[in-house]
Amino acid sequence: MKSTLKLLLFAAVALSAGACAGDAAKTEVAGFPEIDGNAVLEHTKILSSAEYEGRAPGSRGEELTVAYITEEFRKAGLKPGNPDGTWVQNVPLVGITADPDTALTFRKGAKEHKLKFKDDFVAWTKHVAESAEIADSELVFVGYGVQAPEYNWDDYKGADLKGKTLVMLVGDPPVPDPTNPSALDPGTFGGRAMTYYGRWTYKYEVGARLGAAGVLIVHETGPAGYPFAVVQGKVAEQFDLVTPDRNMGRVAVEGWITLDQARNLFALAGRDFDALKGEAVTREFKPVPFGVNASIKIRNSLRTVDSRNVVGKLEGSDPKLKDEYIVYTSHWDHFGIGPEIDGQTIYHGAVDNATGIGGMIEIARAFAGLPKAPKRSILFLAVTAEEQGLLGSQYYAVTPLYPLAKTLAVINMDGLNVHGMTNDLTIVGLGQSDLDEYASQIVIEQGRRIAPDPTPEKGSYYRSDHFPFAKVGVPALASGPGIEYVGKPEGYGLRIREEYIANHYHKPSDIVRPDWDMSGAVQDLQFYWMMGYRVAQAEKYPAWKPGAEFHSVREAQLREAGILK
Image 1 (tube, rainbow, N blue to C red):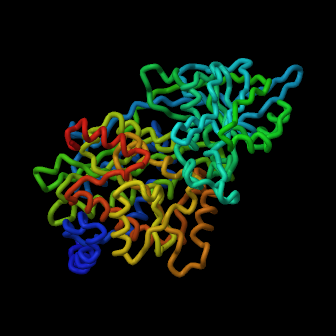
Image 2: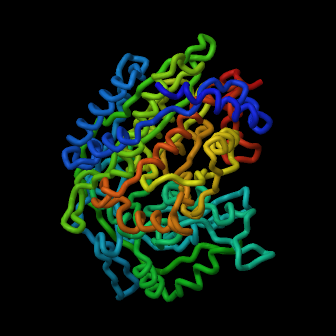
Image 3: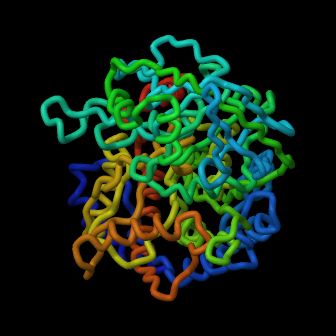
């Protein structure tokens, strides 16, 4: 490995930066590794090829993918990561396919309005049952559907919503700044940045907690962060973890309706959509009964699937610390074979996330090639069913192979930069943990700078595989490509990001393209490698910042394990 050739240069830089990140600097003994961008590209081409059929859980594509990652981990120099001596962690899933021949009906008196499946609405059930039904359930508009006591916010005001169907707006309430009405209040729901209250997963969760029969979210592209076409991708088979109650504790029907159909619904109820949306950004908002009933019956095809997380391990070199872990996560799955778009049915998932898996394999190779392994152990976790709701990482987070209290950090890779080098690196959720200090030092050594998420309103921190770990307390880094590209005009980075989301994200057209420039991927993979290395060598555990969303969860976890007194 050639990384040792850079030792003196980067050790000197690290020592000069020691005042701002002393812990990492004191332990630095290796420079940035050589990462082969062509190797990352070749992994990506194979995993996103038609032969792998879009890598859906429970498919032939999964069999090929798991076998490929396992073999590449072995060739890279890793050992099986499961304590039982295997390369996999079994993840029990249920696959549920809704019959598309169904309709959602809104009825008010003699007036009836039917919505067409996929075009006007998308709905499903996570009940492990042959059917799920809402019959003449009263519709109630509940604004953004948020209960947030820390912000003195409650959209429900104690209303009895059992058996009713809740209509919610997507995202957080965009509360105006009282000192500047043209801006958002930074002290409420993070200002522009989405909190977990804005995520669709939270909205279904709170509906279940209140005993609702169903939850329908009004889709708007801006607040959602993606077009309705992405939601339409959910008409195919969906997966969930198999719970003891067969998911019967969830609402019977979860779904989305288009903005146009929402306006029609509000008009049927004799209400103005924009007026009620305006009221919903105030703390005084109360649930609004529509006097409209909803009916739908969803028939399901069911199958159980034993999917797999692939786990490779590099054991630490320090006998006192090798039972502590840094975890790299990256999801191997995509949507398999799905609805035809522009004549194509294989959802290749090249950027999302064959690139991440290719990058993980090459980071593992760089670690295994060190003359001496890091003090702590490194776990490489290629997870399943991210596209189905972070299920593989969620399963690991609730049934970990190694103690979460001794897991120092999670570093996630989801969609590498394939457009060239950048002068910056995006950190999503910047300011939440000590990992930011490590990141800041490393990018300075790369001649770059840290940039905050340019679209924090999209809630990216809650949308990838680091989040289930953060939710249970483990400090987790979420980063992504920068937006200031070397040699490109101003605005290029945001433009290509927006074009990808609009035209290729979660579509068959997410394929390897001849104009890809892997130098940016290499740049970011070197950053990811160094993040893991320095935390593995550090004298103390990284922590959440006081006041961060998961700070108290982590402290309780460490106290229970006797690590924090």
